[in-house]
Every structure is written in structure tokens, then in C-alpha cells.
Length: 136
Ligand SMILES: [Cu+2]
Figure: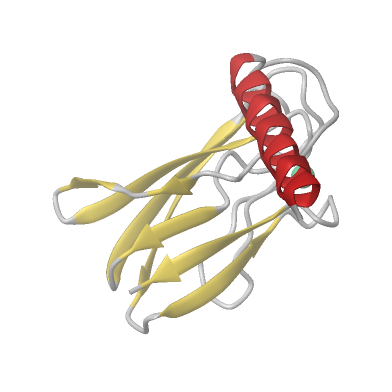
């Protein structure tokens, strides 16, 4: 029993060390656990909830969740330099889609959502490039 708990303690220590190393090595290359996608809250300008979202080189959105309240929402979407083209599309909300943007381009879209819920965001060019607009 004692050797088992000693082993558990060792495992915990290794796990903690790995976490610390991972945090210190932030910005490094690939490998290890996938990064946790960020949750964004909007800045509010004249009653409009504004999100800044970037389509990235690694075919992800810069945010995993956009959290807003019912009302008018603006998404300022841009595609980072050096990236493949991307778009930002919420198929279930009229007007909530950009055109396909190339690296260095940006487009703002404004739309209104009244119903709380979870609305999937996709890039139609890259399977798995997804996010969620959360209205609550
Ligand atoms: Cu894409």
C-alpha cells in the first residue's frame, strides 16, 4: 500500500512538472496537448457587442467560444498574414457570414440574435475549424 501511494505521489509530481514545463514553453512548437481555445467576451460600443476574431495559420479561430447577450453583435474577422484563406460562417443566423478572406484581409459583419443558445461557427474551407457563439 505504501509503495502504491508513493507511486501515486510520483505520478502527481511528474504531471505537475509537465504542466509547469508546458506553461513555460508556451509559444513553442507543436506536440503535447492541444491548446485550450480561448473564450471571448465582447467589448460594447454604442450597444453593439463587438468581437475581434482571427483566422489563424494553424486553421483555427482565435477563440473557441464567443459569449454574448441577446442583441446586436459585430464580428471583426481577419485572416492573419501567411495563412490559408478562411471565412467565418454561422449558418443558423442570417447575415452572420463573411466572404472567403485571404491572408491580410478583414471583414466586419453585424447581425442580431434574440434567442439564447449555442450557435456553431465554421470555416467552410477547413473541416474542424470551428467555434461556438454562445448567447445567454
Ligand atoms: Cu479556414
